[in-house]
Image (cartoon, rainbow, N blue to C red; front, side):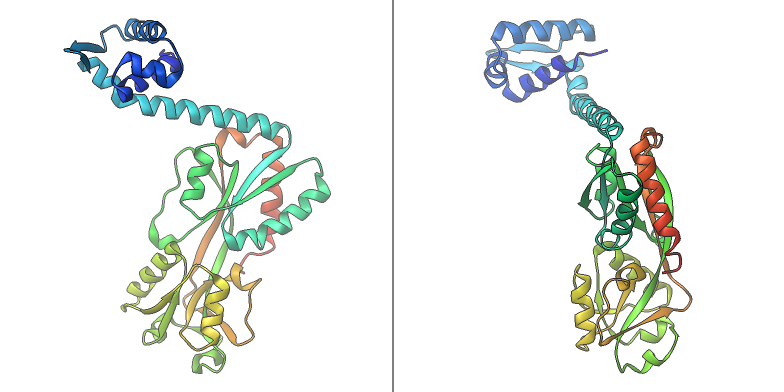
Amino acid sequence: MFDSRHIRTFREVIRAGSYSAAARALGYTQPAITQQMKALEREVGSPLFVRVGRGMRLTEAGETLSRHADIILDSISAARQQLNAITRLRAGRVRLCGFPSANATLIPEAMARLAAAHPGVRVELFEGEPPESLGRVVRGECDITLAFTYPGLREQAPAELVEIPLLEDQLTVLLPTGHPLARRRAVKLAELSGERWIAGCLRCRANFLHECAEEGFAPDIAFTTDDNLVIQSMVAAGLGVAMMPGLVLSFLCHQKVTGRALEPASRRHVSAYVLREHLRVPATEVVLEELKAVAANRVGC
């Protein structure tokens, strides 16, 4: 078992190029650096440096350890943050991360229920899109994240995370009022192959392109924006049509825009993700229960 302090000092010696430079950078004396490196060499069972003129170079053992030093220290840092997260959760504080349309719909309703039933639980809310938001849970930067996936993109969550399915969010086509297909209850995607399109966020755009390819056409994307209100305003102005999740339409609905279901139905999956060891922490449990309760009332949105 290596001492993390020795690994950190070892990494600084490599970066600085000498024991004396590492000592200055870390605020140690040079003899203290020497003692730490000797201790690390005893742990390794082999010399880590050899003198070359006035400088030094890594031995084969040193080269091997240097390749793993960042991984070792990053793992220790992640473990420390996750352990700190557990302590905070037991105190009734939860850091919750969600994508924009979830933060505007599911989460406010769930937090209102939580405040009424469990006033001692405090929630810090962050915004983030997958896959980065999933990485934040793994790194211990948040405790629960809400994320969406598209069936056709074959996306995999990190193995450390447990997925709690919440709902299937139906995709709709946004048409300007007066569009000939707006009179229909449902629209086939292929029927819009000749339209100009306004595309959304990167992952939604990737799914949109995938679905169009499945229907045998490449869409003419005239504009791209991550702002859902801007998308609706562009559709209303007749600049194109768009594909948008039902969650977004539940809180944004331009008067000059008509939403129609896709035929056959197309959906994205919305889930909560959490580290397995946090599942039995009381504060996490109650937040997840409220999220599931709210999502159950929105099935098929």
